[in-house]
Length: 460
Image (cartoon, rainbow, N blue to C red; front, side, top):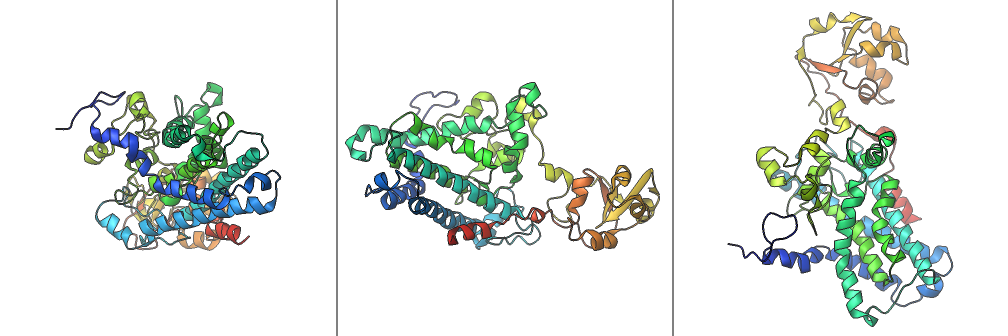
């Protein structure tokens, strides 16, 4: 039996010696990479003290060094973790062993072989682009506070060991601050009482989710690059963890850098979608997959348990049930693009199968069906809205229009136009269809620059 030391706040079972070790040491050792990056940054850019004179005035020289260091960290850490979990042979090992929480490959659903920088779905390009914007905002905050300290506008001290107890206590407390802040900043961008609410009903969270945080949730099957793939407004809230404390207390640059790189690097493993030896962020994977649960982490205090939004991964895996309160269950929903069209080519969300003779009966202006890629689509309500006029649709009513559709729309959005203009229009699949399956949903039309954006910045 485990030795019960005391009964903690919220948790049902008492604390064990292992729990105490986690709070005192383990939770910090898990972020050793974050600390090493922070220490290296401090050693290279701050330890000789020259920054105190140089950063009094804004100039490209010292700013570019900070930006370059951050982009190099992003390039090395993010690419290594993406390669390890999705590109190398380890990916197949993860999937075969059942260690990938969602066995579908979000970057290459048809082949299961993800590339380093591009994907057929466009997800990877989006994630790399906005993760890079996150690292740039992180570097921006570093530049701003370096200047504020050097110019004497904010208090700072440069001798870490001049105040050893204070310095070590603040360094040790960063993990507690970071995770506590995360819960409230994150929870505030989800619906406060109903996801259908808005500003007029006072639900700021629903408004922020709809217009800001939902962008992060496009990665409902997350990977390493998903962690910082956020709307820039969310980056602002996210990085308030690093810029708030120095406004009120005197810190050493290493305190700031450790908190900053904690924010930069920790989400990489936490979003990789893999169990051990991956990041093992099972509770946060459930948040991405189910949306309204597990807003925080179970450290230092599991606030989700307190508020009835904690979903235990092992329970869900064993039973398929989410161990959350009634409010959270009511707010659960499917990803928007998953509702509109299949994630995997050929895995259509259908209601029934149709014969071509059955489809042919729906050939009038008031009852108009057609077939695209073996999918039977009810276009009745769309006929009058078609930008190309009604005639072209009515001439193909009750028929297979795949070839003509491809000829006209291959370069203007393809099958994704169905999800855009006729959400919920797919009513079934054509029985015996042997032609091309619906193309995999892609974000290439949005032209996210992805890795080219990162490499261009490094070259500059």
